[in-house]
Image 1 (cartoon, helix red, strand yellow):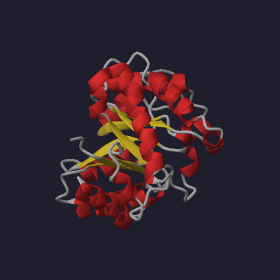
Image 2 (spheres, helix red, strand yellow; image 1 turned 180 degrees about the horizontal axis):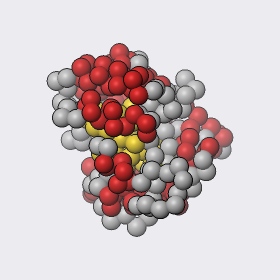
Image 3 (cartoon, one colour; image 1 turned 45 degrees about the vertical axis):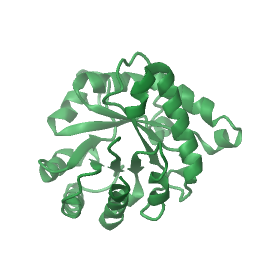
Image 4 (cartoon, one colour; image 1 turned 60 degrees about the horizontal axis):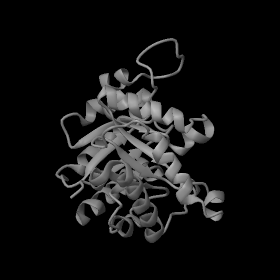
Length: 251
C-alpha cells in the first residue's frame, strides 16, 4: 500500500518566528501519527529554522522551488545542494504559480526534476489544467504533455511524487469533485504505466486545490489519490492537522 503524503505549501507567507511557531504547533499536534508522511514547505528564509524544529520527527522539509545548476552566476536562485544542506528532503517543482508568474516551462521542470533526483532530493512534480482548458475538454491532453515532458529521460520513479493541482481550484475555494479528481489521477497513473510499467502503481499522486479538513475525507477515499498538497489550510495548524488526521484514519 502506498504511504499517503500531506504536504503544506506555505508559499510567500510567514517570517522566521512565525514559521517556527507554526512548525512547532504542527509537530506537537502530529506526534504519534505514523501512517501518513508529513511535509512542510516554508519560504526559503525559514527553511533552516523550520528544519531545526522538525528534525528527528515524522515531518520532512521541502523547498518550494529549485534551480537546475549546482552553482554559478544565477542571481536569486537556490541550488539543490544548498537545499539539502539546510535539511530538505523534497522539492516542489512546476507549481502552477511558478509556471504562470515566473514562466517555468515544461523543459525547465524537466531540468529541475533531473537535478533534484541527481542531488538526492525527491521532487513533488505539479501538473494541472486551467479552467479554460477544462471547458475545452483538453484536460487529459494538457496533463499528459506536462507529465511526459516533466519526466523525460527519467529512468526511475522510486523517488518521484506527482501532485495534480487543477489551476482553477488553487486559492479559489473551488475544488474538483472526488470523481473528477480520481479520473485525472487514474489518467496520470495510466500515462506513467505506459512508460514505466508496473512501477507506476507505487507512485504517490497527491491532489491539490483548495483542500480543507472538510473535503479531504471524500478525496482520500479515491483509489488513486494518495494525499494532498495543501496551500492556505496549511497555514492554520488546527486545519492542517485535521487534514493529516483524516488522511491517516483512512489508511
